[in-house]
Image (cartoon, rainbow, N blue to C red):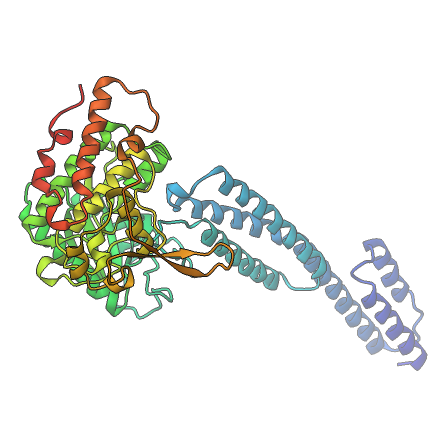
Length: 524
């Protein structure tokens, strides 16, 4: 080929390639026509070579134009998928988590995320469609994970989890493969439940109830019992939690066997099984706990006296069953008391801290602090009286909407007890294992107060601990009550007086409580 013509062809080819992405179709045709009109005094092989190079340039131009169009439109369906997935996640969130603030945060988050994707598209237009889609998916997964972590809000003894609460939903035709070895758990040993997953060949999971220290709880329908609703408690997969789960399983079986007619208001256990090394307990389904009832119907003001009376009656029945079976619950509080949909029936639940009376040990941090009896803090032998104290704290909270004893530590809890009932007897203090932490040799109380200036703890010796709280006034709270209501509130005050006795041996027992006028007499 003529060297001059070769140089002209190469120069023209480079010009076309360099400007192909921005040139219009008409200019491209003009350039190609220029090449076609080049006067070649060469043989047929040279003409074939020119024609071959022309086809290569045309194919290259078509490929570049196709990629450019694909880049501009590739993210629209991806964003649509992300929005759909976000909606699906919201369907499996607990209802208590839904609020206008959460919705507003989701909308703002989605808008910001969309703008980030748009900016990324402009700055990285040279990447392939596959790489861009992968990047969007990674960002979406990170965004959804952060939103679930922000929204997840359980009760006080529950923890945040850095992992996602759920794996992706699965199809209806999913086949359970329990024998497969895979990472089904998060870093804390919680099982990553999947909506639509079949447990034990019969329980179809459709919702998530909550997550606690020992387990997470899901909602499911039993295919073998006409799609009956059940709650399944899935114990964390580690040795300590598994032992705790086995103990709770034993307690539930014992209580259910002692109450075959379900009259004493302890949670019913249907069956149990193992799923991927997790102990699972199938339990009766209930709507919400009393903490949620208080937030929804009596926040800061409490519930009606009739509701408190009904709940008290059922709780005292559950305490009677506990005493009959020699079981101490050791963690009674509103969070561990469930109610049905109509809020008329309650069940005592969460027996993970329960123990047989013969196995009880002295431990200063047994029971949640606000519901902890004085004998626990002092280090005295414990029995069923600690559960009665916890029920008393719960009843006060149900009626007033306020915590009965809100101490920040055990020492402050003791002070609050004495603010209500006066000083502990010397006899009790002498028997106390932990007396030196709270009393001196003369039985004076060593109050651990926080200095407001230095912000350090200082010991204040208090010798005179006269009662300073008026329980009657706290219950009435300035209300103008009718005569029947006033009489009922006075009865509640008398019942609480008999519960909040510092000496556990003199505290009212379940049978006596059931016969108390507050329970036995209905409100006219």
